[in-house]
Image (tube, rainbow, N blue to C red; front, side, top):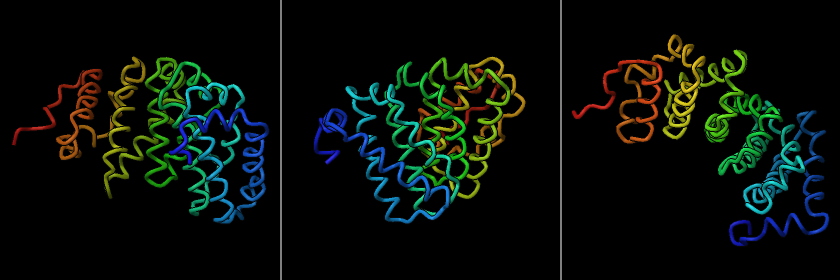
Length: 250
């Protein structure tokens, strides 16, 4: 019904006890997560609960109420799991979907909340261990944080934060040697492009930009995606690189 009922989010939020019951469902599986004995049925049940919370996180009338009540923090233990069994991956993906819904139309309040709640390390972990869809949603969240001036400043404020993101982006690019995901590639290039807007980060990137972004590896994909090509050209410009145009007329 989440797709059929436009005002489901306000109804869920304002009906007595409903959010409390949903949170109790999530909390009930914490022992199973720590003992790593979560069953697929338990995972599916909680994923359905999280889908309802995503509905609340997406709605303009309930988004800030959702954040001010710190509801996303109840999902962080699910994002901290590293077990690669499907039932754990599904929980991580559903939880990332809620954070992705918050940043889809991001505001200063959303970014401030996320930066104060240490979501970045959780996203980086999922960018490393997740399946392609989880990697994509986690990278989308990082890209949205970087797009905000405060988010960019926060990430580039310390070498530890910058290099943590730089390392994971580089690792994901190298994984494309087996199979390329155009959606994920676009997000990765967008992250690099935005990082280059920071002076100190740009200096580091001038020395450490992955070869795959300069040697034409992704030409075939860039020919089909002028938006990503422009992001790459912006990156080159910021780094003072006189690159030969990647897309020829041949």
